Amino acid sequence: MQKTKEGFLSKISKAIAGKSTVDEEVLDNLEEALVSADVGVETTVRIINRIEERVARDKYMGTGELNQILKEEVEKILVDAPESTSYTFDSEMPAKPYIILVVGVNGVGKTTTIGKLAHNFKNAGKSVLLGAADTFRAAAVDQLTIWSERVGVPIVKQPMGSDPAAVAFDTAQSAVSRNSDVVLIDTAGRLHNKAHLMDELNKIKRVIQKFIPDAPHEVLLVLDGSTGQNALEQAKHFTAATDVTAMAITKLDGTAKGGVVLAIADQFKIPVKFIGVGEKATDLLVFDKHEFVDSLFN
Ligand code: GDP
Image 1 (cartoon, rainbow, N blue to C red):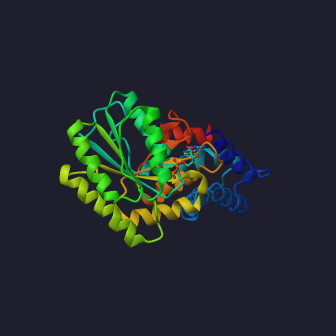
Image 2 (image 1 turned 45 degrees about the vertical axis):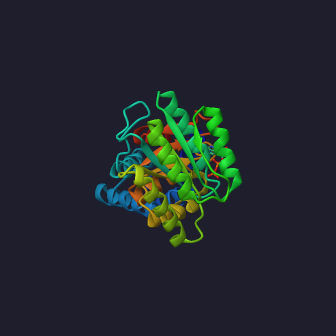
Image 3 (image 1 turned 135 degrees about the vertical axis):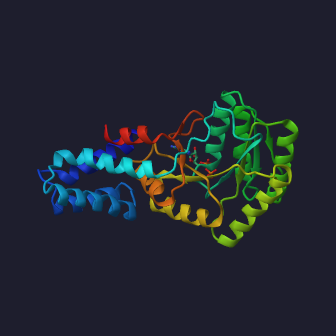
């Protein structure tokens, strides 16, 4: 998160450089700075409007106060977004087996996130099962198999090109017979056709429900935090195609643009649950709003 923090702070200080009062020009610069930190136009405008209201109300605002006020506005956005802590790795899961369907476009870090989650759950003493239902790319099944070996958890898979729902069926069946605690099911991330995506995810859900009627317990959308507007577009598509219940935002170690987390929290009102900060199994953080705000401003 170091890069995000430095990027955010340096953009803000550039916006107010040489100015002692928050005026029209400072607000314009700040608007530009937030958009360039990937906060997104909609969310940026909301933040700027709120600051303008405060300037109008108080008649005067020094640029020295701006940091604190911006921090308060960012906090409000995150507090308005729903809490995400229905479980932690250590706590008892709300259901057993707890089925997490993982969705997202190829390349965003879906497989890596599944590997990291498996590692964390296993470390917390839970039995984990992986389901390789992204059967369209041989590499997807191979990568997930590598993670299953690395972490030491079983995987259910079929040859490339098999029906993803058939893999989901086998996975759910196996989870019940093994008495697994947590099941992570990878899905294909093809976005070119919303109806197709919707049908495929619905079919996967239906077959899982044959074994576990209230599953999936979570639909986790993985987004690449370094892709800004693309991540927001993907979030729009996936939330339109299925009931996304949580988000994981990856690659925040490699970008100075962590503002996308704010845009997502503000626009989708779906909890950001996990943050990816590297390629290793341990590089996954449970998202904490307060820590995030502190990391941006302190
Ligand atoms: P998938 O196609 O969505 O399953 O993507 P992968 O999990 O294969 O990840 C794509 C690439 O991104 C790989 O090289 C991963 O090592 C890398 N990656 C995934 N998550 C992170 C992260 O949080 N930080 C960094 N720096 N790289 C990541």
